[in-house]
Image (tube, rainbow, N blue to C red; front, side, top):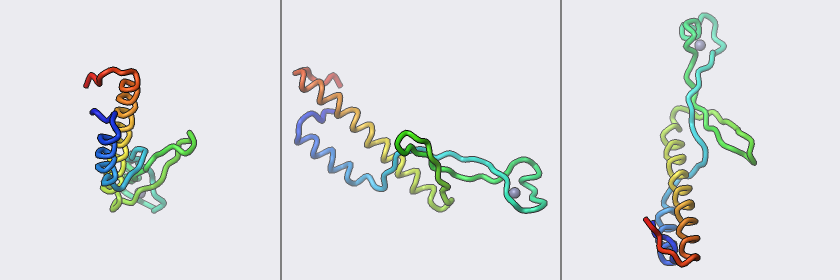
Length: 106
Ligand SMILES: [Zn+2]
């Protein structure tokens, strides 16, 4: 990815602006028991699947429950966030190589 020139960078940022929604974190499925009496799933030790969005807030790991109907959108946001992170990493590499007067090897 050659993004060392301002013009290239503006083009790439245009694409990134369409990356919506955005999130940084991950989503994991956990299983926990419910409060119902005589629940079959809990009696079998299976529990109930629950999605948790985990993220860092000033270094501290935090988690939020995600409603099943929001799963797709949160997944998309995480994917978009990873794309932005890859872009930033690649752009930093290109910047340093350009400043050193070296061609981008990619
Ligand atoms: Zn249960």
